[in-house]
Length: 268
Image (tube, rainbow, N blue to C red; front, side, top):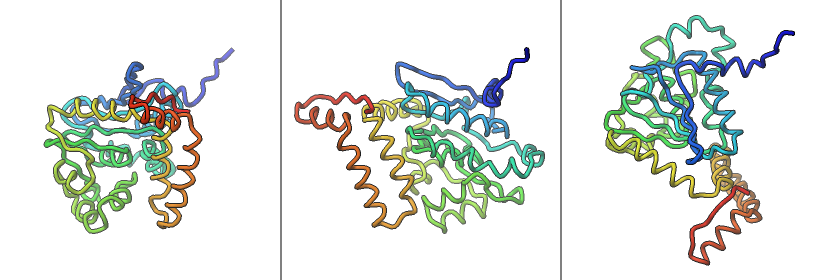
């Protein structure tokens, strides 16, 4: 009898250019790009990354997800040859795959050093936090190929820094440093290169101290109201606040505050 293998199992049977490390004691999962020296992202890898984010989002043991890379560079971008070989239908899904960190209900941290180009930049922009160093260079270089960013890069960047700065980066294929990215609000933290891992560890510990329910609610609310009129955003914020008032975590937080002790949240 032939064993039937689900497509999802085949998709993740052999991760292409990355691995997943799970630290149960830290409630942390790391997606590690491992195709040095430049960690080029293949077309298959994009599909696999989406599936991995979805799987980690469903795992109650995972509280925080970190995306990092082996070597001196986060990623120099995508496999150029793969774009020519891929079908139009497959290419149309690029942005959906790379938006997986944003759809994920849990906090996602991008650990960026060295080159962070093309899809490497776009994936980082879809994360909640980007930690950069003095070695980091961000760029969307698609104009050099006669193309434009195709995985949400220009759209997300414009939301963050405005149309003028986005045109400057996209239309000139301009590289910007980690320091400039931090000053513009693209990177959420700037540290010395030798301190990148410890800065990530510190942020993970900080996020784990909060209520996972409140974290998920905050992320979804902020994502859902990014384009909403102020009145609608305030209305949705009020509804979310009201729902959290009946949670065990909120009760625990209030009691811990009055008892002058550290709150212990369970996500309910």
